[in-house]
Length: 115
Image 1 (cartoon, rainbow, N blue to C red):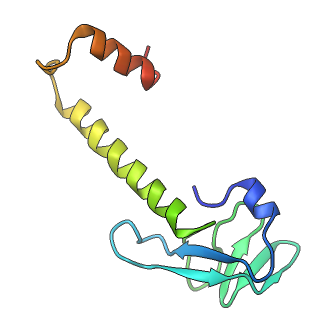
Image 2 (cartoon, rainbow, N blue to C red):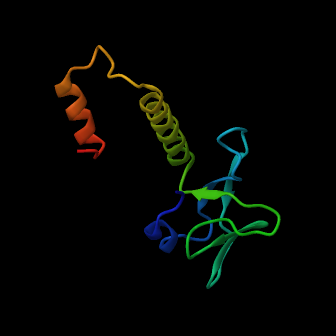
């Protein structure tokens, strides 16, 4: 996910962002970076080159995603972890859980867009 289109359009020199190099979900590889220059196609933070089209890091030496702040990064990581636990539970459960009523299953299905 990373930066939204509006966040990309509003980047400013001197602004701090949070960068993770693509392995952050398994290893700690994130850090704060500061925008030093903004060109027509890229924003630059040291050796890190950020595309102004999609907010992705496109440097030759690294990749990854840039986030507006560290909290947004962790919110996304936690969302993905919670969704994967839920998804795997549903995939590995062949019979309806005995503690859920049909109404609860229908409500849950509606909330996730199945029904």
